[in-house]
Length: 401
Ligand code: SAJ
Image 1 (tube, rainbow, N blue to C red):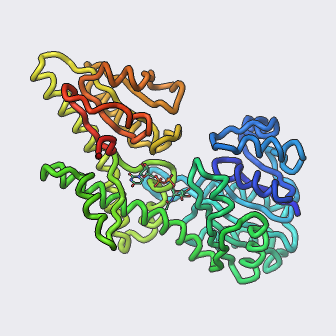
Image 2 (cartoon, rainbow, N blue to C red; image 1 turned 30 degrees about the horizontal axis):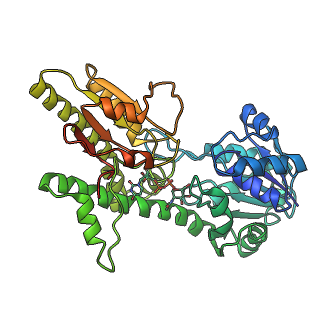
Image 3 (cartoon, rainbow, N blue to C red; image 1 turned 90 degrees about the horizontal axis):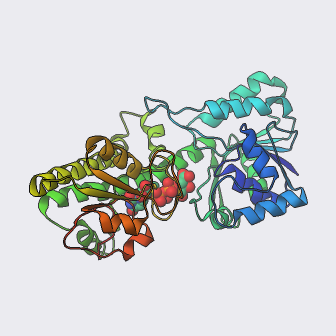
């Protein structure tokens, strides 16, 4: 069987590699020639443990070949970004462009699948596009939606072991897509329709966003009430039916901080909690930046000099090097703008160098700082002691114990 993956990013490339390893002949397509070139050299352009060896194997065996243009196949997968526009409206133009690129290649009996996180109704929209442009294919190809669910850093395991939801535009399409995924997925493949599968993906990430917003709201309340929020959550979670997540400096990444808007944009009157959660999680980052600026002013008044401030962490979550949509990066930028006369040391132990921030070693920054701002709960920060002489703003629970 031949399959064509449109998009060789964080999801498309690993999925193409795993499918190739399981005997599917893959063309991996990306509009970025550099990505295509690196992939064909067996070099991974993303960071994912264990993935480069696998890529080397499938390139050497010829099971995967990257290209800037799609090739005639039996199945086509749209795995391209779906960002949002300035007004938080979802932008499905990449899905549409990828679909248009494969349109001339489609033939009777082919499978067309969207994996990109998409607003409800996108699969039906693409179906209409395909049938308008290629009317002879109406009811002669299989069309389905199958969202990915993997956690960056654990992609090889999760691509194979996670359950998946597969929703076709009709039962035959669902079954055809199941036949494809069963080749490499060991988790259960749950059958549904396309609209439910689209909403399921948005629901999963919105649910997590709402739960994190609850923890962040508690952290704001506890700050005013003089209560340690980490101790509070730990105690509340001793109840058999309570399971509160952890507060942090905001919510980042390209999924949880984005996907809920796909619901609120389309159902603004009905999605009050989801919209509020987004606002709370965004506000938390703003609140953290204000806190740092206030501490700096207090320090200046007390000691009549500007403090050294260590901003600890830039990644969007612990122990990764991904800075996309990172609240820590937003806070650091805001603090640098608001405290331009302070000596600000920026730390990110998982990144070697950055084009905007001059990075300092985490131990050196900690030792030199008057004010230490813990933004990301990287494991290495946990070995730094609580020092009484320093002002420590712990936004991510490094010292919760
Ligand atoms: N966060 C907290 N407190 C917590 C947990 C997370 O503040 O208790 C923050 C993190 O620091 C980070 C953000 O939330 O800034 C998102 O991190 P995450 O680990 O919750 O999620 P992602 O974005 O890495 O991956 C999510 C996953 N979705 C769910 O857990 C429902 C993953 O399974 C999806 O595949 C991925 O989104 C995606 O691609 O959609």
